[in-house]
Structure formats: C-alpha cells, structure tokens
Length: 337
Length: 120
Image (cartoon, rainbow over all chains, first blue to last red; front, side, top):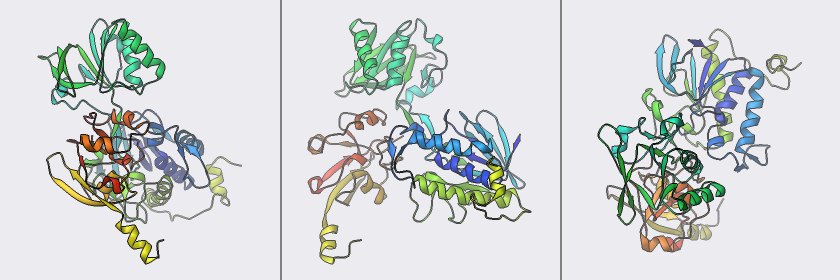
C-alpha cells in the first residue's frame, strides 16, 4: 500500500501541471496512466500538430508541451505508474483506497481525475462472434510474436501497425492483410513493400473488404470477409489481428458513484471537487457552466484543485498562498538555492 | 460582438436544414447555422449518436456519419487525413464522413446524414 497526499489519474498536460501545483504547495502525489508514456492526448493524438493557444507560447507541438511539463515537475521526483489503469476507488475512513488493474494499491485523502475523455483502448472488431476469441486468437496487440510461427494470420487495418506486422510476420506465417479501402495510411515504404509481397504471393492482400464473421468451434478456424457490394470470401485463419487505432473509453470511472453528464463529471468551480468528498475532476473530463476544453483551462483547474487537496491532506494546517518569485520555501521545493 | 440589428438578422437567417437519422430510424430535423459543422449542429441540439470526443480536431472518429450517394458527391471533398481517421471508425464504408469536417452552408440545405450503430 502506497500512502500519498494525492493520486492523479491521467498524465496528460492537465494532470502533469496539477502535479506541479501540488509540488509547489508541498504535497506529494502519485500519477497513474493507462498509456505507456506521459502526455495523454497531446502525445497519443497529435504529437506533431502545432498548438497555438498556450499562454506565452506562440506555437508548440503536443510533444514539446509535454516535454516542458515533465521538465517543470522534475524537481518534485513524483512517481509515475504507466501502463496501468485505476480500476477501483473505495472509501475507508477519511481516505480513498485506489486499486489499479496491475494490483497496485494507494491510500490517499485525495484523488484528482485528469482523465481526458477516458482511457485509450484499442478499437475492437464490430462482429459479435469475435468476442469469444478475444485475447486468445483475436488480438489487438502483439506481446509474443513466436505464437504465430507457421500459422495463418489475418491482419486488419491500413496503418503502420497493420503494415509493419504484416511484413514482419510474413517471414514465418501465412499472412492475409485486409483493409477497407485501396489506400493505406502507413508509411509509403511499407505500402510499397506490402505490394511487392502481395505480387510474389507471400502476402494475400484484400482491399475494400471488412470483417463479416469469425468462425470456429473452440478454436478459431476461419474468417469471413465482405466487400461493400456484399460479396464475401472465406479465409483460413488461426489468429486474427485488428489494428484500428485507439478509442477513448470512460471505463471504470463510470462505476465510482460520481455524478456524470454524458461522458463528463460535473464539478464546482471553487476547487473542482465532484459530488464525492476528496475526488476532484479537472481538464476535458470535468464540466461546469462555461467549461472550455482548452489546455489552459485544465491548468487553471489543476491549480485550484491542488489547493482543494491541501485541506484534506493537511487538515491541521492552514494553507498559505505564496508566489514562486518570492517564497524561499517554494524555491527549496524546486531545489533552487 | 454583433450589434447592428440589420446585420444580425441577416446573420441568423444563414441556416441550413439538416436531417440527422439515428441508427434506429429516429429523425431529427434541425436548422444549423452556416459556418458550423454538421457535428456541431448535432452536439448543440443534443442529438444522440454523435460523440465527437476530440471536439472537432479530426483526432478521433466518433462523429462518423454515412451520407447518401446523391449528397455524398455534392459535399466538398475529404481533406487529407479524414480517410485515415475513418479507418479507425466503427464500420466505415465508402459513404462515410466525419461530420466535424462537413461545414454547413446554404448548399447543404436538406442534407441527410445517417448515424452508425455506435461510435465506439
């Protein structure tokens, strides 16, 4: 059990800056994120796209913004728990017990949900029949490529993941690549390679097809694909891989007894606390009259939520507002002389 | 802000009627202001079936709609990147569009868009 002042759910820009504000006022925090890297939507959705509305930063990319935020909180040496997702929140006295998917447990008086639009998860096949093979022969990521050796593998998708794995696995498996249109969004060099392999019949390429059915008794045997015109084909397959990118799912957050408005959490605008004491929501996931889904609004919300956390983390102390320019206490916390 | 009353009248009149058809067949006919996107028209009128998780930055595929053949060809062509995002939509087909990329104008008067069974 890790004891801390605050657990932040989500390591996007809002979560990272909230951590900074907690550090400034002398609180400790632990940060959990489902992705394998920091930055949230900025890194996952638009690392290279320029952002023009960060105050005093005329232009920066999602990646630059993330790197600067990481640099800004470095002095506080907070722990990050990546590739992990908060699954459960239970109330114990004046604390919350936070449990993650990997089994980590935290005890904390405060939880700050900075979860964006939820956690990123792979988009799955729309076919119902694919569900019963989910995790065994219908996969959305590859952990151990040796399982595909000498097997028939049907790969769906048109991006880099689909193309790279099709090329890689074609060395030792019978690969079929299926994509809904003629164009691929993957790197041009990979597209060229795929076309070469298809010409040599090393890869079976099916464009303008999508999945129709997944068949097998206990183990996967074959799949049926269909064209938009309704023509269908059957392909032998031991494994099916789907690479359709990531979608954002609210996930377990919906089960914590918080008030929800569509996919967002209503909060007060004094300290961004939700209907549950000690649970705060900031950034894209929170809602209140006048809410703007801007990074700068997330920064403001994080700063106020941090002060909200202070009263539960230090019930016997009075919070004193200080400026970073003037306070020697803050300069110590930042490791400055 | 717009203060001139004459200009204001002209401004609010610039609308197009858009028909949103849910997967279950339920129709919503709303007037959407020119300059907004078909996605914004749905969100502002609380029409279910369009999630628009990313808020219109063409970074997700949760405002996916199908456009009937005759209208599909009349719409301004897809920008680079829209088809790439559509690859990641739920059951896309050759008449799929991201509604955040369709700008409403007088030309779109009477447009019908069909929502997929779900967005995620």
